[in-house]
Length: 78
Image (cartoon, rainbow, N blue to C red; front, side, top):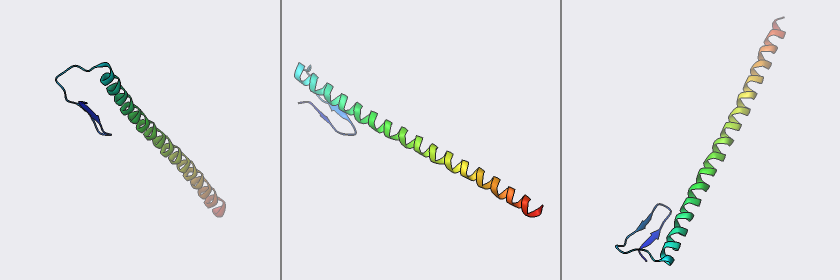
């Protein structure tokens, strides 16, 4: 066969046309690579959403703690 797949690249080296079996196998390899790409993109999207969620929670906690400490200062002075 004139092609091989790796997680980095698909290469095809031949001067002749593909027969149906080779074309099917090459198509399957391309689909597998696209699935890997989709899975990686989905994982990155989930990771980004998780980081945004944690950042939002920490930001909310920070605002509430600041509000509590400012209320405590007013109560002590008054």
